[in-house]
Length: 414
Image (cartoon, rainbow, N blue to C red):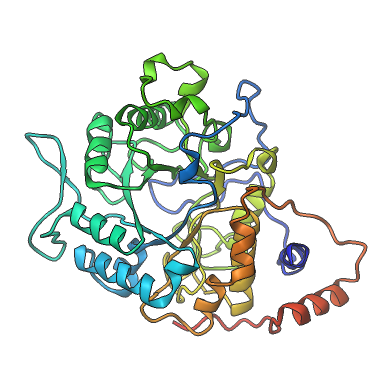
């Protein structure tokens, strides 16, 4: 099955070559570009022997991100949405398929001017009358973990308070809530800057000092070569009695359990979108970017994996970035999911789980594909060439073996 999926990923690629090394359009003012392909890893960075808190990320994280649900499907973003997501993950069987984390993103954080602590509104359309900890407790009762969202800068990508200058306080707040996972963006700090890398390090140090184990996700959209510094996880982090100042300089690099390698993904198969700079990257663009990073497969291991961005499987036309999002066919969706599984990427689904389009639930619940992604060896598949095989014969065999229909340009229905 692994070989079949690998061949499928190659054979179903669009004929146009990836425009690697050419900075493509950016998504927003916060996403000024994508990583240059082929950049060598700095020699000063050595691979570690062991990750921190390895039990938290022994296999790639599988999650549902509630942000697109709030903006595209449900039309609201408050505690009711996330309680409903908990219930639906259980009811639909997605939790049992492995999607046991919910990303709570852009959910209305404000900073108390006196205590500097993060709080949530208790009234209005974005109300959290029961508070964040109540949601975490409810999710835990149903076997689901909660991921909080923040930023290394003073504001996050939604204009809410970031962690800059309050890293330890915010980590302690998340710990008090019982949060299992934290996704740290970089909108407020300038993607790829030296300062942003130092701030990721500062947030990592706060995690170590507070000592509450959390999966640490670095959402830097591939800027600043995060593959060169984000995986530097060292065994000293597991010793919670040691303060960050007592750790070696090598161990105090910015570090995370997973890290973004490319820009925000658009809902399309091909490379770049010709309609403008706000529509994200195509599925194969992000795949080709990652394949072009030297040594990326060798350094992928349990507790340190690259994220190719959230999955676009099941997203309707025009979502999430606008007119350039022409949608994926079911065949493209299957292949998209298979590629992400083979790349050992965390699997963050984003479709409407309350009313999934036909065939989408089956794709994201595919047992054999998920088994590849969750292989405890944590190894990434490496693209191979199939020039010695007749393409049409190989493609026909794959389609027959995997019961895949012939690709059409009809996107998945909304």
